[in-house]
Image (cartoon, rainbow, N blue to C red; front, side, top):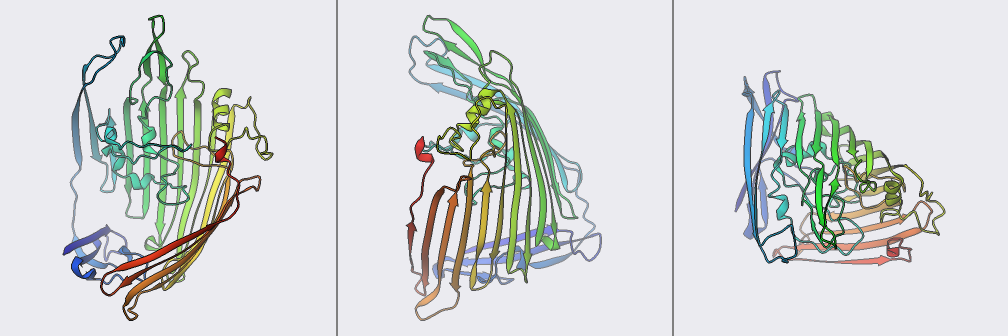
Length: 460
């Protein structure tokens, strides 16, 4: 069996200004019986876990000490592999040693100042190998401690589903691999961009405010290339770049409602030999989001609205126009303004969802739009633009035993999307069901029907 203790601290609703109130629950899983038991019952027909927890009161006169944590580290790397005898940059045995560190200082009991110099890339280098045959970028989760801690405060998702990773801020942009490739017989390009320094202030106040401000500066990186005649050339492969991110949100009604704001800014110092003209020199994005529970917390209304603006050389904006996100160069796309001489690109996007989230019958409707010019990939992660999507969900859940059946779910999920020229990109209906039996066996099936549509992605 497994025992779980879940607790969440809060000063909201305390009996006095000096008293802390903790939400607390105790759970036990008996795996052989497929059974969970809770001290404060967590019913399957009710959405949420923290909201049904009990309260631990009587914690008074708690004065947390001033927090200071210093975490230095050193990274040693070594490799041994056969190399060409003509390669002027590599030998069979290579090694390197680098140093860095993280510092955390508690400004108040709720706000923390964190700083890092040359963060540890050891975890990043352990990313699994991926064979990507699509036109979309692969999303990798963050593993560096400085960026993982407090990441929920900087979260602003814009994806069509929770697992896509799309959002206004993608921390792996900071310290990314250099974006310029060198075309030579032999090359020597850094695997990552050096983070000269990064700092953030983040935390959650007793009044329900969540605050996060982050600033990071990455170094200009230089690569070497051996030409066919044996000359060695040096070229800038990544410019000096500054990233600024701000996020603020506030909970209302004991967390049942919330509203927030986020802004990001990316500035690059390009210059050099012009080989980085395909990058934007300024990129901004921002948005608002909200969520609201009503009708006895049975219904949820949520959404976001965001915009972006990027500026750069004509080569940079042309690259964005012709990217797989939008394909402005399509001759049949009359709604797209393909302009090889443009020096800026702007766009917007938004989502609205209305869903019933508890009871036997659940479901709702939602919609998402992203204009062709929406572009947040300088500081965020985005795989699609130029889309209008509507979707629905209807599900019936039975939580009581019915003969040999312990419970079952059956659902219907229709969805359809178009581009901004009203060309239908997909129409699909999914029907699914799953069953749990009293002998702990499970079963189910899923079927889907897709209708005629036009794919712009096939043009790649």
